Length: 279
Image 1 (spheres, rainbow, N blue to C red):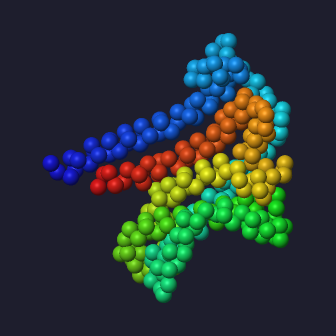
Image 2 (cartoon, one colour):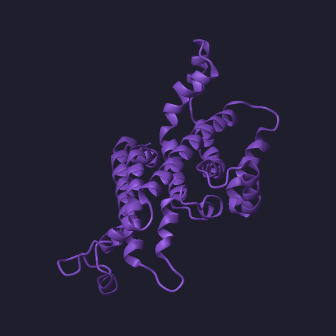
Image 3 (cartoon, rainbow, N blue to C red):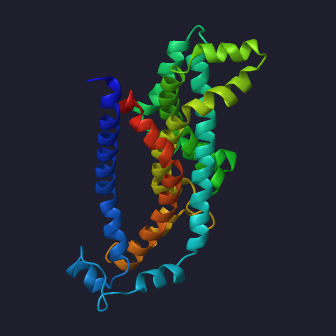
């Protein structure tokens, strides 16, 4: 049977597998959302049941709106996530292009050095990072979070994008140089459009840890003005008692922006995942 005959079947199978994993991943989200509309008693008596006339309650959302400035928390999280993603994709793509396109002394060592960030967690340097932020006067600022998250995600971004950059045709880039295009124009107009699926993949895997992170907001930006939504949700969790209605409602609201960002990148992400199945 020819390759063309196999390709549609492989594509359908790849999409089916992706859909299955998506449904499995969304099941915890579904549980959180339905329980956010229940009374406290119903949450524990029937955690998988849909809210009904007797169990439906908005007490969790009312609590969220009364305690803390959650619109500000959402704004802070959105600013930090979007700006960090922009810098990660921009600087990561530029570094990946340089490593994959130009051959220079120490190219391999530079790639290995950048890859160390994947193997060594940035949290090991929390004390040093905090000292740097204090000395720079950046404690309790969104700038501090953006710098940390950009540095945290760049190694993986460079590693993934450099592999995709190597697959871009040299003939296409050389044709651009013959036409008088600068290296910047070649990068932005010829190379970047061809690696959009890879960039979408990096964006998806980068934005979720940034949005959900509790560690660095708690360490370097815990003030009310810079508090993120994940850190704000912790006010409902106490040492001896937890307001589960407030926690679930805050988490349900926090999921919405992540889903929106995922939908924005999903088309390119699916193209990148299934591209190998249709060759």
